[in-house]
Length: 397
Ligand SMILES: [Zn+2]
Image (spheres, rainbow, N blue to C red):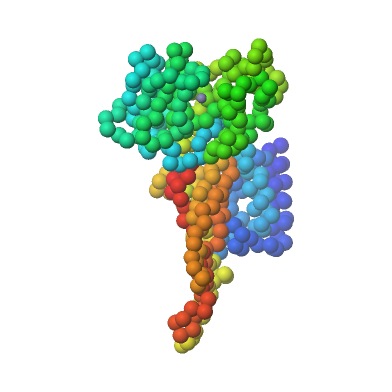
């Protein structure tokens, strides 16, 4: 059966490829001399070579059309689909602890053993490391009592001292949860997409607790989520929180779409760990510039100079800082970049964002160019546009 589908897929590709129309020149540039193997959902695979014009070539001489490439992209395994429960967290890069190292002091004798075992739980399953503070500026102080619930914490590294406050009822799992916030994780029920997975009964949530059930975007926070909703997350409230109730209403605040409920988690789930790895063991993005000869020219005479130099800019994804091992993304990555531009009227720069979907090995960013026309060395026209990466979560560059 697999084989039949494979042949069918190849037939679609090759019969339409033979029309030799709509070559994708300039549409999806890649570094020349590379090959990409598409593993398709129907079990087949197609290896494509990228020639020095940035065209996708199969079988040595068949140039794929834009539609044919779209077919491969759409049908490859994992593309755009997130099926594994994962995590939600801050999207603010500056809130991450540099190197994943958290400095701390304990001024809470009641909970010191819970704190140390929670730290051990974090260190044994994530890249986060805890170091007792000596004189570092940014650190966690385990001290004080929360206003509501069993504990509270700040989201991410806020700069300076930040407290994790634990109530008498707090246990090791409370501390793991509150450290999760300090690391950058948000409550799973605040995912922007949570309504696809759960129902929330706001009529049974009192005023002190309402914000804990709003999505991060409704709260105006900068967040992001990967994978699907994780019902095992230690960052997820249990279905029925007694302190959040309105009056004597004992019904749950949250249920699954099928009406069922869940209890507390007492440990970091795989989805929590994946979220922390996303923040602290990110992928690497390489900005690739390919000169587009067809879109460029240079003409000069004794008096005049007219030129246009055009480059296709794309981003490629790697697992390592040296860009040796290309990868297909297993999580979406929202990449931030700076687009600088200049003209005779002045120059400027914009910050842009591009979300690369699951399954992609590269994304097209834009066209960089320098274009000018001059006479006796004086510019009559000048225009430039260029791209550079800037810091964000989920990647380094
Ligand atoms: Zn919390």
